[in-house]
Image 1 (spheres, rainbow, N blue to C red):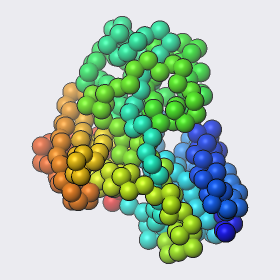
Image 2 (cartoon, one colour; image 1 turned 120 degrees about the horizontal axis):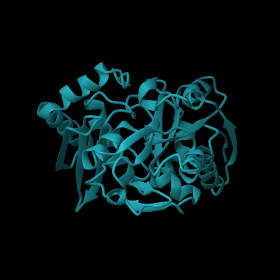
Image 3 (tube, rainbow, N blue to C red; image 1 turned 90 degrees about the vertical axis):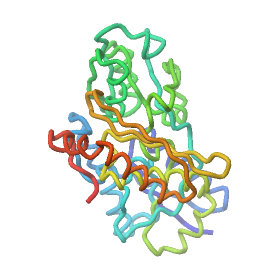
Length: 311
């Protein structure tokens, strides 16, 4: 049996994820330790994520620990990982996916449509902002940073009328009391990889790869590979106004994707089916670029919302 060291961010959710994986590894007789590593994204808490634009802002320091052999594997929210890893690393497993939906959380209001005009809504994501503004252009959107507890506390204290969060994180932490609405996928398409965990290791570390292989879920691997292929085609990282959700239906992959202006005035959606995850993702990405996605992304980059995370 192996002795493994897991690298993780120190947030409550990141540690839940690391302990979840460590528990699964221990059931196979392995000895596991967890090392907390503070990342750039954890240190910059007073600026909207879309304004930061640091490549691998939630992963860089953890990958450095992998390279230095201080840890053997890292547990990430897959949506935080850049779509193109350097040759030093590989994704050894993608776990069974949690609920990929975004959810509407509020103390007073039952859903997006129930919000009064010019209500204050908090979200850390240009993707969520764009799709929300397309539905309700009157809403006032505010950047929301901090861990899950911090965000919920700001909602409860009245700073916001509502906030939008990922269902997966709330489900994992058991903090669903303020969830009022599961937002339909066709209304708010999730981030690529949302709800999935990725196990990152050093490239060529066959011993660790073998030990964690049982964690790899075939459906999660296929669908998230498709979503990330689309994201890569569009040249986007996790903070761009791009959504992608793939599912396996009758043995085929169906990919739903969106590219939108942050103000919601232009939203491009595309749905296609296919068998090859990478080919389907790239095909849908190419279609969206031709339909005007390229202009939208050029505009977003030019306005300084983000720095592209991919070459």
